[in-house]
Length: 334
Ligand code: FAD
Image 1 (cartoon, rainbow, N blue to C red):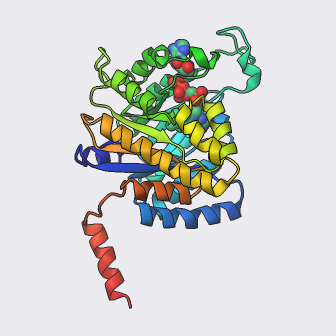
Image 2: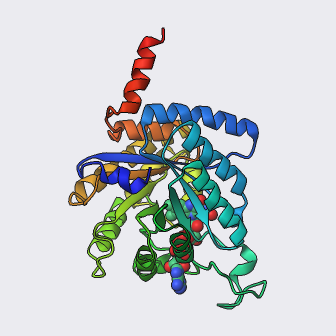
Image 3: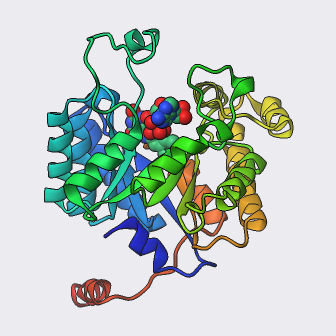
């Protein structure tokens, strides 16, 4: 299934969520994650799951394997992340063909981060001296559309607090990235998924900015805010630094008060995420679609489960021919 079809089948007042996983390094890790995924998908009923992609294709076969397990074995609507910078066209083609062969209909088209050695080259010039076919995510969106037409539903990334590249945090501004986000949508992106954030106001201002943009390209597009449950104070510090997500002073103070007690941080973290979800729902009431939230799970189960349950993000079960027969099998089978 395409994510866009599933979201559009819901009513604007409905809620949904999606869960992100990364491929474990070892077979044992895969085995454990699969069991966890099975539990989580049954208990939480995500509308879809996403599988991350290591920059430069470093996790190519593992990402494809995990995506295949999600799509085929667990029968979850799956979205494969795909980055394009420093990737050979052969690896990209293999990933797209592999996804198609598995029945995956959703790709999150990303640029990825260039390796460090590339960062300081004068603009336009590359360390290997070659002209790159895929420089920005928009190149990947165009490539997928050219090669596969409408087969894939394509998502792209957006940054409510601006994209960090080469800019000091205080000068980051989502307005600066806006022309490029417009370009990605015009090239054929179907939905937008955002970088994590902890300041609900920054997110709501960002979504409002997109919805009211004079280009009109964001009027009807599906926009899904990205949230990362708080696992510990140290992890939070690291991720907010890397993603340049700001912590509102009041949130920071509450966390500082309990920072040395991981259990208290986790419990407070659940409250903080629920408050963010509540604020977004309360402020953005005129959204054209069901309101969704994407969770960066870090392959962890508890905090995200609490947030989803507490925020009433569980979708009601709808009876379809498929799950009706599954249910009657359960009844018939002693
Ligand atoms: P782009 O849209 O290409 O933008 C990159 C930067 O270039 C921006 O600053 C933009 O403003 C600028 N820009 C774009 N076009 C132009 C232009 N024509 N001229 C000048 N400047 C331009 N990374 C991974 O490696 N694996 C993952 O699985 C992964 N998953 C992610 C999931 C989500 C939801 C998000 C938000 C990010 C994810 N990332 C992942 C990180 C992402 O790869 C990085 O943030 C990367 O630095 C930017 O990717 P992008 O697709 O936003 O790039």
